[in-house]
Length: 104
Image (cartoon, rainbow, N blue to C red; front, side, top):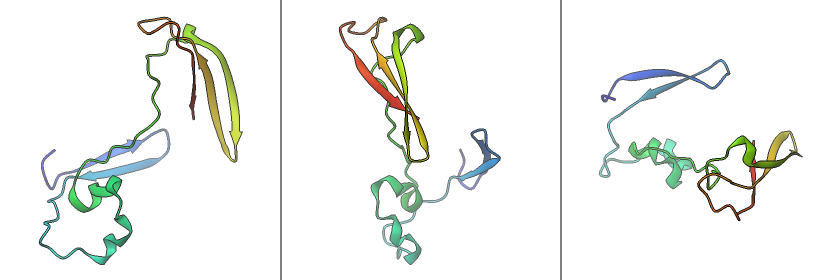
């Protein structure tokens, strides 16, 4: 993506649009604006230095096939609904493994 170009993306199934711009990095010698005081977090370096922000989401250790799901259950946590699945992988994994995968 060239610097200065702005791309618009639709976000999920909602009526949200995300504008993405690749900006010049903030130089270490420049005075940091006070508006960045709340961003003293390594995950937010995209704002202050242009680094890519990568969120860590739970991922199953194997590719899960529908027949690997032995039991599915749901957890109501406040206003959020979570799905839990008991997985016994049968394709390309250690078939003696058994684990629970919980996701939104």
